[in-house]
Image (tube, rainbow, N blue to C red; front, top):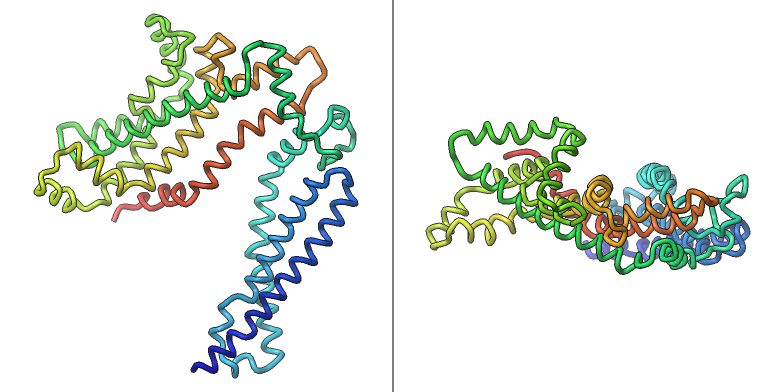
Length: 371
């Protein structure tokens, strides 16, 4: 048995070396090809070459993975069997990695075009046919965009606008998460007359178009004298205005056995302690999932700041981009500056999804089915 394991371990090191050599060759070929295509954009070409290399390494390395160790020497003694096995593996892994990579590439085309445009010079914007890779890549467009904005409206600095955006987003996200969790816990654990009817009415509000509530909400905030403040953007979040968040958390709470709460009550815990110290940690995947969705929704919220805010120095980033575009409407389109700001707008959302994707996917799937 030990000799078989030693034999199975010998080819793996060779195959890993083969995968690394293949990746190195792919990197060199792709780097040379991209440099010939756009000689001045060295950094961009190296990034593209690394992406292609990682794709090639994943296919080759997964073809010769540890699954080969389950085959005995007799099963792969024939060279024809080995070739057929490797051929099937290569075809399978090309489909397994290639098709999702192709689909992701199609979806990422607008984002990659945005990054490409943000790194171009102004003359490159109007070249036809357009070049997908900027030559050369101008990273100074990012600080220059804010400098141009500061000339149009003094006081609109990077730190002020990002501070406004983070302030609105963080307060609204915290309010939505906490209020939705409290309401969902009440619907899942407390029995009172009309509970199911109220829950049905809350879900039915999702059928009401949001545009129908804009004018009544505006009139209410105007009568309260809170226009041109952040209150209309933050205070409604404390009313659990996200029925989807409440529904998702309620489904999670229903999957938790009541025995855990009964044991906590026996130990002397009250309802608030049970909610914060027992129930919330158990629904952490769903709690973080609605946090990601809430952050995205408030970060990209355009209509509410447009309706309630009047002072440019109070604008969030999404409204500043529109303000910047309208201020330049009488000039030649400065798409490189616009795309630089749009890239800064999208970067936090992408980073958040990247680091929280495990909790996000788990939160949207685990509580979907009761039982």
